[in-house]
Image (tube, rainbow, N blue to C red; front, side):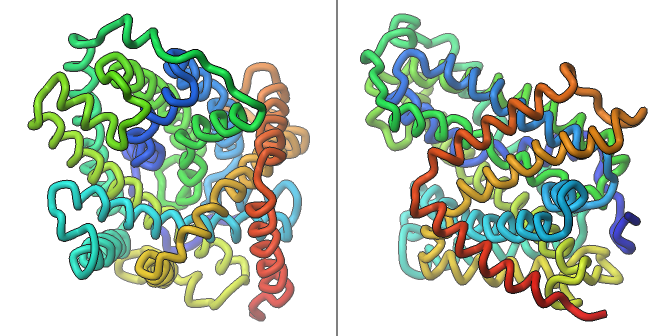
Length: 426
């Protein structure tokens, strides 16, 4: 399959690494320590590490699949090539719906974060200004060119990582190791264990979006796998370190709604707490930048294959970006964010991500059997063992999803089937 004409390959290896970290490290890291400790007590740090190793199975599947292709599409592309256009379409369609709800959710989360140091952002016109202003700014950056989007991502990445690194490096000197290793006894029921597993695993979610814009990366068959593997190693270590410092410096962490800011205030004063609060805002903004960069590429790829208006498949002649697809995502995300109906769609994102994970793991098995380990593709240790383990993991998590979420996905697939049934005529 030829690469989509008109897209500019302008994003280098380390920018791709930055994009991958940006898409995973979001608002979750600022809430995870309290929730994880409340569920798992002193075992939280080990659970965070175990979750990272588990997610690495899924990440390696994406890295392997990405090494076969240089064109954009991500999960949609892999499922289409392995199982045909209908399955591929459904994967791409449901993931794009997830991107809309994520963009809406993150813009509201940004308003909540900003409200901590600008109370007017909590409601009314101030909240609208933050939500609409952030979405329109990120849309303009992404329309202006993938170089601008990648540069913005790198700036925001530095802005989100510096506060976390300061928190870890300063906090390590103040950790009470008895506090870090202590806590209430853990007694999880079957549902509680499943909830804890989903919480920890989805704290690492977002990596699946990276290959979507492969048509704008330099040497994507090598650089995307490198970025994914580098990302999961760095993020796992960062999450574990943050968890350790937070639970070792903040007594009663499970009851805190802002655990990192509260812990930072305890050992570094209000100045460090403010730095962490600003870091949370930048973290959300950075993740949403990735959503506005990578989400429209699903819509663009679907339209390029004949599903949806032809305008969505076009690349702007000057900026060489899918301007129409980016604009559509902005309009829909803005409407959802301002109406508040994004909450229901946010619930859908959990299961749609699992569908993408399952389909990609299965696609790796098919592609490997069909093409073998080509000289330029990533070689996974154990042959099919990693994708098989990832496939079983995804299915197990899907079986634990609520009936409501599964019904919502069913409705989305039904709507997608109608769109698929009536493709655009050439």
